[in-house]
Image 1 (tube, rainbow, N blue to C red):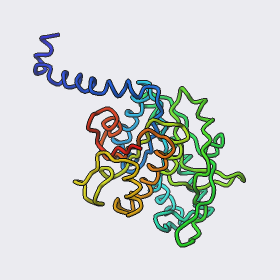
Image 2: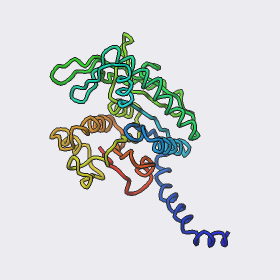
Image 3: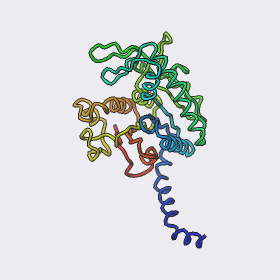
Image 4: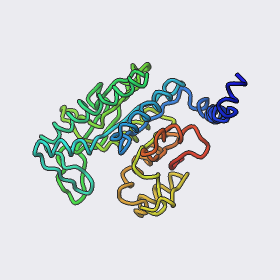
Length: 295
């Protein structure tokens, strides 16, 4: 063995790998048995390499004893298929106007396509997964959302209640939840995936909720990557929402962060999903990679 280590350069690479594992060990021990909700989206959903690295991250979390729960949207795919089918793509204050034909398409894309692709990726990575939407076991009870300037957004919804009982029977599987809710009459609603992730994390009593995004994390100055905030408190997030200093694109995500923390989640993380294995880097290293928000 000693000769083999010399042959590969004194074993420095192997020692670095061992050091990395040892750095992760306290976090693995601390989070074992804990629920970790991950909102999956952005570039991590579009790049084949990032898709594979995300699936391996989730597989590792599951195999070392954590309970990951995935929540996803799929706005770019919905827009792409809307164009193909000749459906109008229109947004009001960042919210997709969702008429009846578009709602049908949303369900087909989120539940029938993206959800099953994620389940398949996790299977290839070595863990069993089950895909769910809001009407499965009444998981996401929804109601019509209000909108700025009283614009009619159609079937855009908000979370009225999370009923996580259906997840209790999936102890051997990773739940993959599409951000579609349903009301008492059976009408489906398109809901922002960040919002669903925050509400689900609170309902599950999650230890952590992680939001993958296409920026470095929460920035003190919108658009300036050098102003990354590595850690802050709920009060700081509430101030940034109130004064808009985080930038309009980050406000819905910060709203979901705030809801999760107010609901008892231990910590929320806003992480750059463009970086391979960003989930593991954030959870298992001292410095992390994005923004950690604590109550």
